[in-house]
Image (tube, rainbow, N blue to C red; front, top):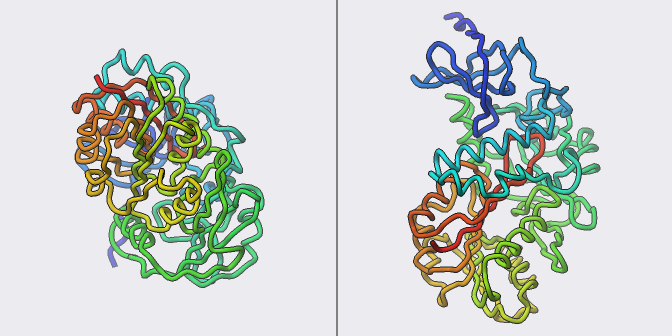
Length: 430
């Protein structure tokens, strides 16, 4: 048997944050993305991926010159190897500064926004906003893996192992007592805390996971497999959970999408309504809520413009989310119309031209087809919500080429202790 190749370690000083939570330095003439390091630190890094000619990936294994912003890891699961709190070693306020730097960088480098535009945004002047609440215990929706012995826990970082230490993100009472329970081996659990504090757990049937090949590619393939429809069993609570934003309630399947941070839906809705108020002289008559899910933004616009808003069109591919929207907006009559399908295909069938468009695409972003279709409809205000910094910046660049300018950008720390950041932009015609 051939002995394993020796582990390769290098000494490197990292100087800036990368979009993805790593810190960037240079070693042996290559860019090095180092997980677990903080910009400004000198570390010993272990190479984990050297397949690329221009860059490598590595893990910090020894801190030689420590950042003043380094703190003890507060998350037992992350300390045990889970992929949850990947910035748990950084003081949360400084982590928000790093997220601000990442967003500003991609707006310039990928979005090609000019310096004056970027400098005038709230993102540049105020930084990334902290959502109401604390930096732990904010999550009200989570997914847990189940190992071969039926024990629930967190997925290991880029691996198939299950980490049984408890993460500090879920709200108190969500997962603490699950260590002593047993579930179907290799299943997955969707756990939700509803608006009244009641816990709901649905078990999703096991999938045949890819267990060979490159670790990064294997993790991506297994995520795709777990996202496909599969058998479900309610093991606690109900199959759906009630969530509230303002005076409206939504009954969402436990396995369906809802914002993970308890304060995010209200904060984002208020932000979008504020953009419309600030940049539209009169209230909108027609609005599009694209990738709208259950219609949180549609509800916020309707409630803020109770008399003038005649039509709101919600487009989403998720039939369960649209069914929840139909139940919520039943009392609004024919003012709300739902359309199931991919946004790029359905956006041409929505009838009257919109005054306002809100789009909240998945991590892949909206893309050229959707941006061009929106620009062709000539809305007076576009509110773009982005959960992937690079794709968000790319979409803003597409809007700029389609005749829109960025009037405002705000950033939100919707996933404390992680590298993820949410951004919302307001765009208006040039």
